[in-house]
Image (cartoon, rainbow, N blue to C red):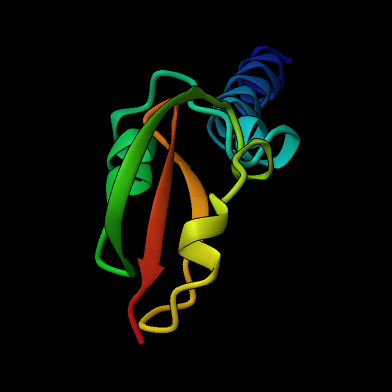
Length: 94
């Protein structure tokens, strides 16, 4: 009986650890829970070149608007991205 109780408690503890590790990314995929890996992943600029950083505060990319003067330029398909809590105009690398 004691071995069964110990096994069940240990199993519940291990399941709790697994849920704590994976649940935050399942609930809010882009939210930074203080995890330095997530912060480093967000700061990666290998896929784009930052053209200009604005003073507009943001939490997600959809809050950023690309200025018209960049949309009219033909040298790059400029778009906007939320980087470090500020909107930035970026040029994707192909």
